[in-house]
Length: 385
Ligand SMILES: [Zn+2]
Image (cartoon, rainbow, N blue to C red; front, side, top):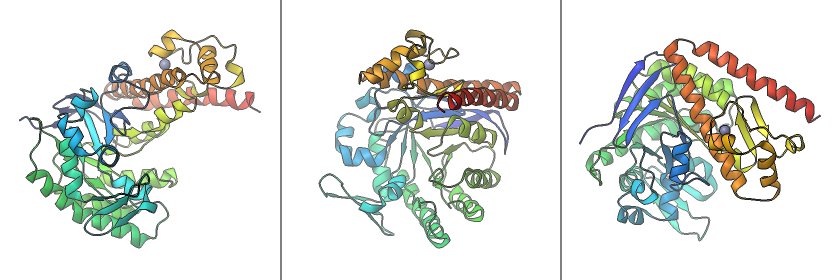
């Protein structure tokens, strides 16, 4: 079986990079964005819709698949690619984020995490070994190690404990990954998740300790959890300074289009976030002219496309006035159209980043893009006063 690989086209330690992650289900061009399909589908999109958005891969969630359906059902269907109909690359996060987001309904010990289902009180044990076994059953191309993700604002001692436990668990994740064979005849790769909160020294220590276990790349976890942006970027820089240049890095749960430009500028290669899909369901669009709230009165008679610079199916087919009308008629296709647009917008933004990094014009591209976003923002602010 061919191993997943990563190869650079433009290489920088702290600076924008372009590369390729080869997986059994296709090659990902980096920097790349993974739309979130928590239970195996991006909300409101079929696989064919997702392909239209130029999404290169989809992120699914180990915890939610385990609790929602169980690994046996996924395995009976020969993995999530086959079961969901999404044939392109799949990434699964490990359940580590749920250690933080479901803090009220879990107990954490050295052995693992016990979650109590919010639906029926049933208990689920998730140890590093379970997370890996489930990710083998899901058949994700890129798997993440089970980590311990602290919330922002926890005492330094708690952040340090979480980081150290993440390091100890890394060995168990790795050993489980080595001892459980891939189930569907293709190779998967396993990425450690760096912790350490916003403490630069802990981030560096976490990166160094996890480096021995990587088979391809790294995830940076525990950020975008409420900390000020400057602290997030300091932590990212600390990781990038510590890692060898050749390793791809995924920044978990980030972010806005503006965050993506900043992170790419710092040398991050890969992202996932619920923002484009969640905002679409609330009528909030990301466009080349900034945020557009399509339910705004000012779009009632606006018969122009949502984003004249966008080539997605939504912008090619309907106007802002029709999109607004669908939202007010509580028509589910409203959010469907806007999800297509927002995910396409992210894919397209990163495609442009790759082009400009290779052309040596990335800094200028970021300046121009931000200026355009701000122009619309000023217009919107004035009209809403
Ligand atoms: Zn569009």
